[in-house]
Amino acid sequence: WGLGLPELESSIKKAREDGKEVRAIVVINPGNPTGQVLSLENQKAIVEFVKKEKLILLADEVYQDNIYAEGKEFNSFKKVLRSMGDDYKDVQLISFMSTSKGFYGECGRRGGYMEMVGFDDGVGGLMNKIASVNLCSNTAGQILMSLVMDPPKEGDASYGLYVQERDAILSSLKRRAKTIVSSLNKLEGVSCNDAEGAMYAFPTITIPQKAQDAAKEQGRKPDALYCIELLKKTGVCVVPGSGFGQKEGTFHFRTTFLPSEEDFPEIVKGLTEFHEEFMKKYA
Image 1 (spheres, rainbow, N blue to C red):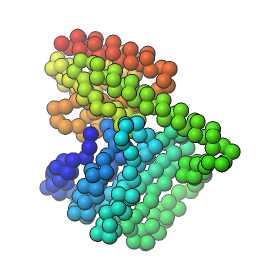
Image 2 (cartoon, helix red, strand yellow; image 1 turned 30 degrees about the vertical axis):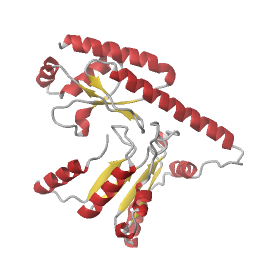
Image 3 (cartoon, rainbow, N blue to C red; image 1 turned 45 degrees about the horizontal axis):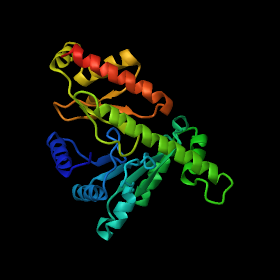
Image 4 (tube, helix red, strand yellow; image 1 turned 120 degrees about the horizontal axis):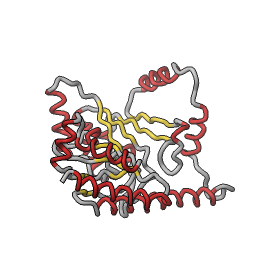
């Protein structure tokens, strides 16, 4: 997976032809739903596109700690932008980070931050005013975010335990990522790229015509029918690709690999048995 310039150019052209004023582009890296980690060359091409089209780049980088593929690494868009020299210093970038992902996964704390680069100081003042409208600050989330940004360092009393727990969680996620992709690729009519990062795999699935016809009768998208039947049969919840703007005529679903490693064999077994039954049912 990657973010191709022809796709970006055709998307912005169509939007403008439809009368929309395009002001920004959102890039999630590592990716949701595809689990890709963008190459440095791809990121530079995106920055060049943003500059040319005079867009704001909104960089969702909340999965930056979740890298599993050999030879892949996370590069922040701020780092990429700075490496491209003074010609790009006027590019406007907003980067996002969160307590909800990574190896800490504290979703309920609702902590996060945004960093603005290339903006007039007055814009930052306006953002502070907007934030000040909230009656109650998210104190617990702010405290946790500060710990995410300043973790234990070598020499600290908690450093050994921190490294042990961090590495154990990330290693387990890497094993689970490989397991789910391998299992999906064994299914009839299913093809899945490696989950390079984040917490997701995004397989493409061939849905029989009879299933597509059944979905149409129910007023559903074909991949939504697959996901609903999977949920009812196994309790496994995945998200249809039709909710992510997939290409016309293709079908996908997004799955996570967040369930515990101990539960994975049972999940894979249930998914495999369901898929076999689904393909027979609509053959």
